Image (cartoon, rainbow, N blue to C red; front, side, top):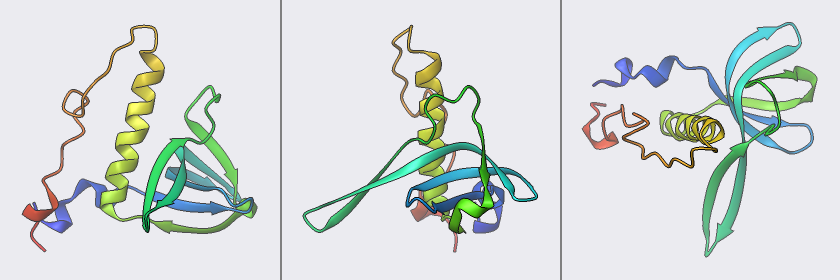
Length: 128
């Protein structure tokens, strides 16, 4: 698979810093004037331990009825498209969160293979 054929290249997934200091990663579903419609936004958390940064995601609005969240562009300080490896981690977290929410009564734990999230070849096999 070449870099041009990577399906993640065409996905508009952005890292957004909000005016209140929160940072989210989300798929941009639509832009309507000053309103940005994000899909499955995830909060970015960071901790530094022994000189290393560790990042993880949590659902941005955990009590929202739907996964489409509107953000007024006046509340955004900056935004940037993210690297493909971050896009993949975001997608894994967002899909896993959705599955866990829908299967809480069944108490089912799925592996990455069962969720079919390993659709990409390892980075070392990519042709640059």
